[in-house]
Image (cartoon, rainbow, N blue to C red; front, side, top):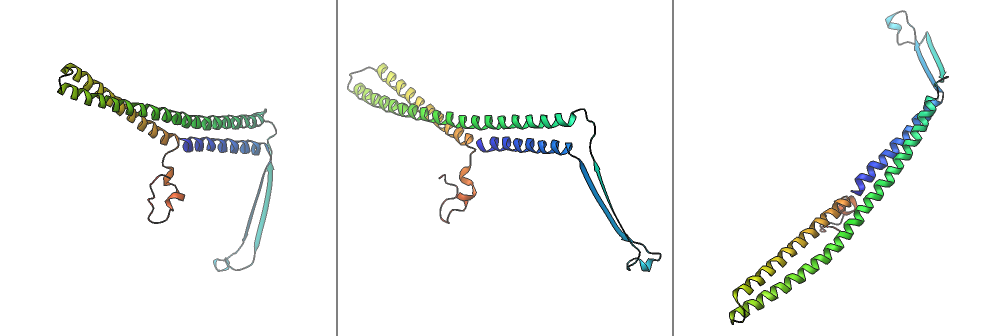
Length: 200
């Protein structure tokens, strides 16, 4: 499924990219600023009256002095994780497109096999009909009719198998494409009267 697999791989790239930002931020100085304001009162009735105000602002900065290269190596590891996520994304997308291409190729082969099975079934049916007529006039024996019937039944079975293969590969194509694309918003907002679930 192209959409699901590519979406998951894309989210992995975003996550790896965010990890690089975290690793870089950990190597930078950390600044903090806090403040407080208030007032003092000696009686409960004076609590909300102006007077006796105070305020304070405090700032600070921290920086790791010695980490043995740990933060640097974490940043490098995050860089490599991003490269790995990008490679996995490319591999996922290429695999998804390869899956679609293989399924389309299988559908073309299925169409050829189905056409051949249809022709084979028609020829076997004509042969069976002719054999029945020949048996009626005494030109062939009953064993020949049974052979023609067997050939026709085998051709019919091959036709059903070719149709089943075609349906199976069509379902595989829907799955490879992510399925249900005709239910998306642009189609769902079609004018009234048009079937919203029909493929376009």
